[in-house]
Image 1 (tube, rainbow, N blue to C red):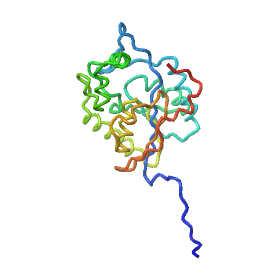
Image 2: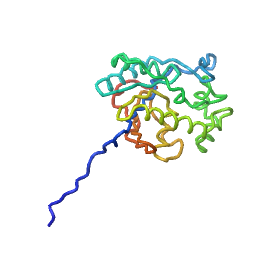
Image 3: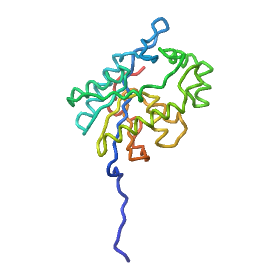
Image 4: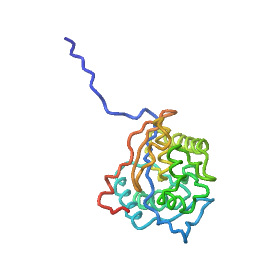
Length: 224
């Protein structure tokens, strides 16, 4: 009988791969019909709610002892505010990646999307059924969204071989990245919680999903 054994082994990132932690921003301020969110380049730009600031602190506590070689944020301030506690711990400056900003919601920007979702607007049901953001009037074309997200992740991976990067971004973008990595339907991962951590390992055209919606560090924080 042969004494040779072949054990199962843990995943090891290939040489040159980039480990990307996708952190959804903390909870942002509530939408009010009489007080639309301020817009930045046509997109709603609310600040963090108090709960979101607590979530940001928890994210920093979770990641402060891990090796983080770079931190990325988007132009929308809720990502920068969520990253701020971790950046203070690490003593580094963030890199702004415009192409990882949230999905553009057209006529439903400024907080309108939340209102339509809460009211059960028929277009929300159509959007979820067709899994296309551009069901909303003026919203972003899915092909253009896919293109910009693919390019942004590719740039980050090219700039950080054999490194781990924390990317503070948005729920729609995390969903898009994981759908691209897994080949799933577009909205299969459209459920990342505020302050959650997801993870992909990128090596060339191969994207490996390693984690989705990790919220262990958020235990005990009241949610809406």
